[in-house]
Each structure stands twice: as structure tokens, then as C-alpha cells.
Length: 323
Image (cartoon, rainbow, N blue to C red; front, side, top):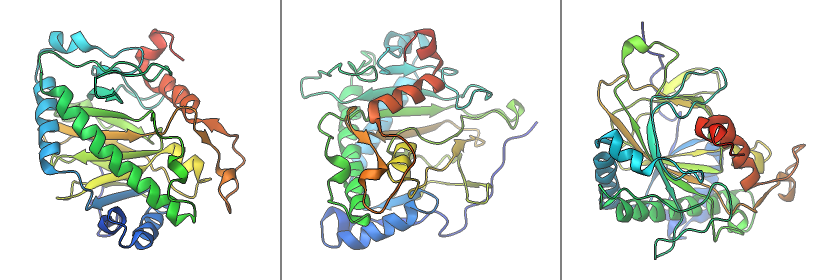
């Protein structure tokens, strides 16, 4: 038996872009131009100058490890809800109809107010479930959520500038976003599990934009324009961002949503901090509203699109007869 393999990444295949001049508004157009070039290529970008303090990342990682290292009986106290909040156990997700289930497990949360309350206006939004056995989880997770969400919003402004749109074009309905964050844990993957077993199988991301803080364990693989798989290791001081299917649809395919997967061959555990950025559920995704772009795809709301994709990927939603 063996692992699915990938090639080493050549310099420049996934560009490294410092967005400081976008964040401080000293040269937003220059950064936007670089973001545009990367997004029309492979759709993956290493982001420097992201503005998330290391202490925020460290606290989030500490809370995540405390959770995943706990007994399953404890984690089951916050099992994933119908609104996609809480613990998603190993084997609860797969990325294709004929794929094997993923080895990963996740803890998922989303928007809440300063009192810890969440609105329930959509099937993919509801109360967060915080584990009592990790008392630091809520504060660490929400701090990371807010910082990563601000980064995503800044990047969306950059994309808009690159398309000659108002900087807030993609953020017009973003006061109650459907964005979700997750801690994703990958156990060491046995070689005997074979080349068709993955931590997470080949897939493109469902939503608008993904912000990934990975560790130095390795395992992320991205499919290049030739169809070959390449390693996308962590680079110190950066986060990895990728275009999702909704942003590709919103830009009539101008921006590319690229398949990727995880194969953890390290013999060690792997932990990722993930922010899936999506605007309000009522947001209309329609490339034909962007001057210069044309699309044959019908307009769809962000909320409806995500419901359709989630139903295909997560077995618990089918069992619970969620849309």
C-alpha cells in the first residue's frame, strides 16, 4: 500500500503577496493587481502582512488541541447541530459521491453577538455549541473568527478594486454573514489505508473565500493547471487563501476555484484553523451584475447555494433530512 503522491511546489507556483499596503490603504491598487493575477491563475495565495497577531493564532490552536485530545464522549456533548455548529466526528464528511469518507474531524462555529447569541434565520446558522470541558474555547475561537473575518473582508475589497468595482461591492450585504470557522484535526494517516484514502478528499471549497492557517506538519496538496498534484506547505508568517466556488461563479470563472486535498504522511497529528467567508444568506450571486463579465448561470442566493452543497457533502444532513 502507499500514499497518494504529489510533486514539490516550484517557487512562484503559489505566489506570496504582502497585503500591508491594502490594509493601510497606501497602495491598494498595487496589491489588488497582484491578488487579481493570482486569483485568475491557480486561485491560491500565500498572504503576508495579514494582521492576525500570533497570540490569537496560538490561543486558538491551544484550545483546539485541548478539544481534540479529549475523549469522544466529551466531544459528543457538542455533536454537530442541524445548523452545522459543533463537533463533526471522523467519517461524517466525504467530498464526492464515490469517495471514501474523510479521516478528519472538525469543530465548527459561526457568528454570535457580544452576549454569545446567534440568530437562526437560515438552516446553516444557529447557536454555537461551546464545550464546557474546554473553558477557553469560546473566547479563543471567537477572537480568531473576528480577526480572520476582517482579513477576508479586506481581501474581498482588493478583489473588487481589481475588477474596477467599488471596494465594498462584494460586501454590500455582509452585516450578518454566513461565514463559518472550524478547527480541523487530521490524525496521522496510516500508509496501509491506500492511495484513495485522504484526510480530506479532493474538492473545491463551496463558498466565496477560504482563509487557512495550517501548521508545519504538511499534507495539503493542490491540483495545478496541468492536473498534477503539488504540495502546498506552510510558509512562516503567512496564511494561505483560496478562491471558493461561489467567488468563481460570482466572477464568471475569472477567478479560479482549484481542487485540493490533504494527505497526512508525517506520522504526526495535523491541525488547521479555517475561516470560510460567505456574506449574508440573501446575497445575490450573479456575475452579470459586474461590468465586462458575462455568465450563463442563473443568479442564486448565497444561502441557497450553500444548502445544496452541504447536503451533498455531509452525511448527517441527509440523515436528519436537512436540505
